[in-house]
Image (cartoon, rainbow, N blue to C red):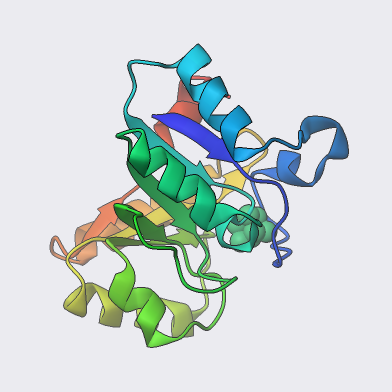
Amino acid sequence: MFFVRFSGCPLRCSWCDEPRHRDPAAVRSLTTAEILAAWQAIAPTIPCILLTGGEPLAAPGLAELVAAFKMAGAWVAMETSGIGGEAPDGVDWITLSPKTALPESCYARADEIKYVLPADPDPILLAEIDERSRRHPRVWVQPRALEAIPDPAAVAFCYRLVLASGGRLRLSLQTHKWIGVP
Ligand code: SF4
């Protein structure tokens, strides 16, 4: 996939594992045309685009960018916390990673739901995950990260949770972190 990582997010999760999105030195301001040109220069044979962040739904010009990628023949996925409004038309796959209360419409549009968990999640959140996994075919749990790699205690908790779910939950381990891809 070709990643487009937006800066900024209305939320301030203390455990956010993508702090670069708030670092002015790591942020560049690009037009839609410049983003598409970068895609063609860096990864012209890769048709899959992932819009992530930060929070893509909070980015100005998102609908224009999605439309431009679609016109160019790309398959467009987006990872979002659901904060910032409705996803624009044309997004082919939405990974919803809820961090706060959201309207049901966000869940209805999600192709998959991913919960990022510490080693000792709130029982209310666990009940919500259980309930969601009975209504949605793709619900993931992902251990929170400590620095560069996931917290081993959170990994163990998520692993046990997935086993106990009888196949309703899936385990996301952010493999790229384990193998050192930034
Ligand atoms: S919603 Fe995601 S990007 Fe925003 S602060 Fe939380 S973890 Fe970071």
